[in-house]
Amino acid sequence: MSDVAGDHAAMVRCVRGRGAGFDERLVAALLDGTAGLRLVQPLTWREGPTCVYAIAALASSSGRALDLRAQVCEVSWSVSILDRVSGTRLVSLCGTRGHLNRRDGRRWPGAHLHVWTAEYGDNDARAVSWRVPDAVSRETYRDVVEGFCEALLITRDAKYGWTEPPQETPATTTDGSVT
Ligand SMILES: [Zn+2]
Image (cartoon, rainbow, N blue to C red; front, side):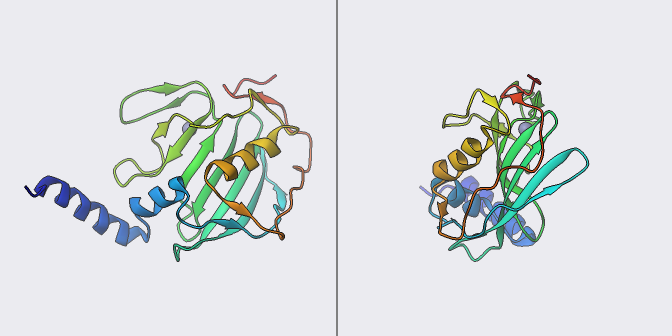
């Protein structure tokens, strides 16, 4: 029996994805490690008004230009895979306090994962399937970034190198509270 509704949903996703240049198949490949992601640059930190952040190119087998963005702010932090053209967060590990899902009204008090979907964009959170340090600070942020890479099978080649964020950033716990 053919799944007409499923076929239609797949077609809608495909059409939407074509407009944006990416789709849920790419996001699924990012999550299951089959996109062949490689971090081929050192993280170079820059200072913004309230955050320090680093962006490094990700090589991939997807044919899509992708970046890794690491960010530490006063009361939050994140590590994300971005679509370079649109700046869209495709997958993001997020330590922002009190995230509220539009879809179901669920509130996430601690670290959570954002996974882009055609229907909800980058605002739908879900549980993280790997361990994130209880207290995230400048000192533990390397573990957060490299844990993200390991969980998503992002290879770090010889050109990758860790550098510490450039200045003191307030320590935050995974629930976003300042310690
Ligand atoms: Zn969030």
